[in-house]
Image (cartoon, rainbow, N blue to C red; front, side, top):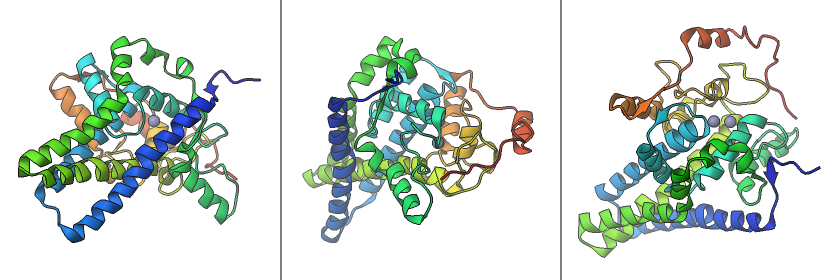
Length: 316
Ligand SMILES: [Zn+2]
Ligand SMILES: [Zn+2]
């Protein structure tokens, strides 16, 4: 029987393959080119600043916008900030927001079970199968996959016409994410080379770095790290180094334990740049109804009292 929650279509598979080539393969090739060009002409403060600022802007668009706001409704904000977050996230080239949110809600529904689009834990036992699973979760799942039915997964987002209109211009926003660093690089150095170098480091290399970081949430964060909470039957984990590199996303076990929390870092020592940004929005009156679990709720789950009967995750 057909599952109304997913759509299998050759047309969509063609689009997925094209997206994979343009937004995953090409940035990798461009990064190799950029590294090769370093031998010919080293980069300076302009390229490094463009890389980090565009990395932060697009990363916050993904973790705060795509993930915490649109997928999990972890806080509320106005339409202006919502649209800005869609644009910031779109510039990362990780897919349109509506599709991303639908896929991610399915990930939480089926985490590490049949139907989870990017689980590293469904390829069976043994080192080789584990490696195959890891590669699938990190990269190859994107080549061709079932498409979650947005009418089923994100009806709340589909009811917001302005959001849909902004989401529709996804490819234009990706292009904007390449044009901005090229323009700034060109203006800052008053040279065509500066524009090209800005495009490479603030656009292409940054896109590759963000892609690898987001992919690590699917692959590494369901394979390696510390399980602080007994989440129900998934293999989500915490890893501080990934949290540092991925705007707080590395507290992935915390996140699976409390999906509706705006904070992924749940202790003072769990650094979470995404949540700091939400708090900053809140200070300026741009975010409200910011959801965080109470200390009692956290400590109950820490002690495993609510899920005492659930064994630690085991698969394959
Ligand atoms: Zn996960
Ligand atoms: Zn999530």
